[in-house]
Amino acid sequence: MTDITLLGGGLGQELIRRAQDAPTPLWSTQVMIDHPGMVEGLHRDYFDAGATIATTNTYALHLDRLQDTPFADQQNTLITAALNEAEAARTKPGQRLAGSIGPLVASYQPNKHPDLETAIPLYADMAKQLAPHVDFLICETVASVSHAEAILTGARQTNLPVWLAVTLDDEDGTRLRSGEPVTDLGHLTPDAWLANCSAPEAMAAALNVFTTFGKPYGAYANGFKEITKDFLKDKPTVDALSARQDVTPENYADTVMSWVDQGATIVGGCCEIGPDHIREIARRLTAAGHTIV
Image 1 (cartoon, rainbow, N blue to C red):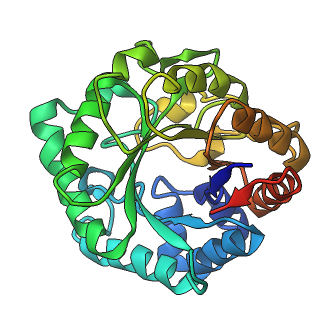
Image 2: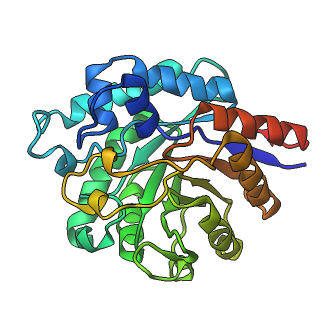
């Protein structure tokens, strides 16, 4: 059968749930600050569930995300903390770390993304801080073609493999959040193509496009009902989002297995997808004769 790379699930929502604190705009960063060791514990839970990749808690550690907070001058310290928690969870051969680079300014809002001249050096700086400590870089929740060009150019200033994960129109998986066709990304050359942080139902259409790009591909969806208007305001908190009740471990694993049938070799979960989901995916992959690598 097939070798499948299994990512962990989401960090932010699960950490908020475990911390039982009121969410702040700093999201999982705040939990990492207030509850040392909790991020490590979640990474470990994903590894124990069968994941082979831990994605570092660095998604939102851009300088612009920390601006106007008490941690505005602590980016390096926070990145180091996130890397240390991920590394501490890695206890077995074959477990790998993906250095997460999220969007500048805000998620899901390509209209707010800086221009190429501004964005490329900022992404490059983040990539260079992560690179010595991770196995590869994963550029997440990429919402437009220009965002993809900027983050890939910045990340390529290291010598590590770079995976590019795009976020889709939840109603039309052939399009990015920007409305641009996924096919418009075809001139780019990441080491793997992924769709992330979009509705599970949107992923199949994007995977059909990825099959034409000539690289390994896959998906890791979220479990949100929708991306609400309140979440698209400045400095939102996750109170503005709610989880779907139908994205159970069993149902989500059904969907993931359909992606594998489409040729996906990299799967996992994003927001609202937790250790129980990853455990069920691992069980189903193994039962189907696939090898998790």
